[in-house]
Length: 331
Image (cartoon, rainbow, N blue to C red; front, side, top):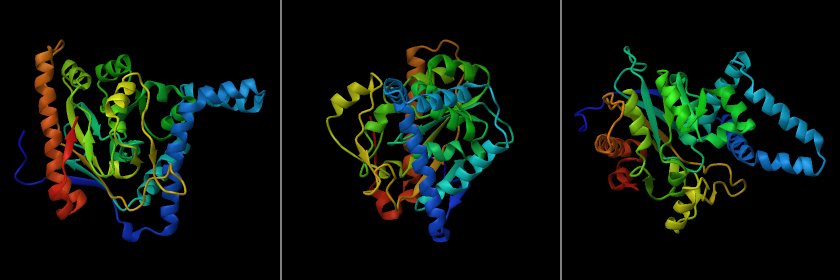
């Protein structure tokens, strides 16, 4: 599990801010802000529907019902969906001070495919690195699993189905995907990792996250740790009161208070470089009913590999001076 003597990586995306025009950066801003607004409006959609009915705004009610019907119909992605995905994939990275997506292993896609679970850290305020991976052509076969309440929301469900391959992170759904041999992606840190996000300290919430390791052991699925350098620097977040906030997270209640640009707080801060490293696979055995001890062994190996990725690539992401002193807190 130790670090290799030399890095053998493949870069599947690399945007150069020096070649980005103001118009391209503007399109990038439109893309990322649209993603965040759809995310938030999806969370509020039940309230919007209730208020529209109470106030007699039946046009809004009809619109929400129409979106819900379209979002849940069993349609397949076509030319329009692919055009939207290409637009997002080409313009979203232009907003940042450079975006790189790097795969360890030296071959993308691998000549011999192995079922894989991509565990993405950190969650951040709005999973920006996750969003970049979601529309990346290299990840088109991967099912990205979202919080069940978010995936059930009609606005987000329709958007995510149009631009990628989404799914629910509910345990029965995850079991079904892996049993069917699908590749999956999940941010295992969840709301807790979002709560801990900071512009000055990298943090991951993983010490008590055993479920995804247990599932991967059950089906013999390889795990690839993914670290998104720069995620925590995109939004400021109120710090402290961790005990109370993390306790609320256990009930599915978000406890982040974040802001980005001063004129539009939902827009990420400018000047941030995003550097995404997809680690080499951790090959797990297939154990249909793993014991707590067996899960703990592979969970510890996962954490060790996640730390290895952080330490090995932090200077590439942050520069030599800052990278030498950068550390990740493991909660």
